[in-house]
Length: 296
Image (tube, rainbow, N blue to C red; front, side, top):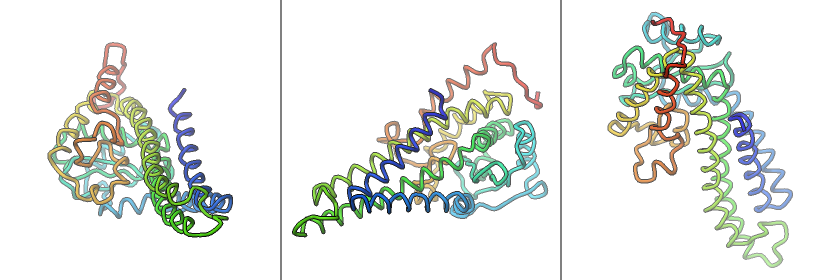
């Protein structure tokens, strides 16, 4: 089963979970309201998500004059990938990290932190930005934003479920409300966000492996990306990203997990295991891999 099919199935599961919660809260009427809400949120995310995320992290746009080396790397990689030139941003953040956003390749943006531009070599930066352009090429940026929007809405809806469950338990006949009553409302509030988080993680991890592979092909040097991921991972545990800590729902957008959580990191991380990502990239750099990099 390809990663695209898996992603489609997981997205469908997330939407079905959202509608199912609506049904448990308000029956068929609640399910239809949930469906309309999902459509509205997806439309809003489609048109506005990119600018919202960039604004959230205080990103500033740069060009060939204000950041010539960084901009030039992105420009060369975009040409190699056959993509329109994305908007290029810098985030004032000491933690080395990066993400891509935008509803399609024609409206894409890539953003890197000042920490990444300062601490990584030009070759490693090229590997990172190639990974982000792979997300753009695969249209992952739209998928991941919609996933985050629905997952966040599920948590909100689950809280309503507990409220309406309590209200319904006090009514006489229980008609038209949450069929499961107070206990059901409490279960919804606890289990629904957890289920949404599992689906969100599954989608994120599926897309990261594919972006690593295509990113390595775009830059022509898998080891550049492998070395960059190793360094970013090590720095992320030492340098906090306070903006990401305040907006954990956006953590999956970054090339490496920007959050500081340690104890449950491997189980609940939105990113796949870093050692496995590096292992796969180093495997690509074996004797059978034919590089096509203009950097020599």
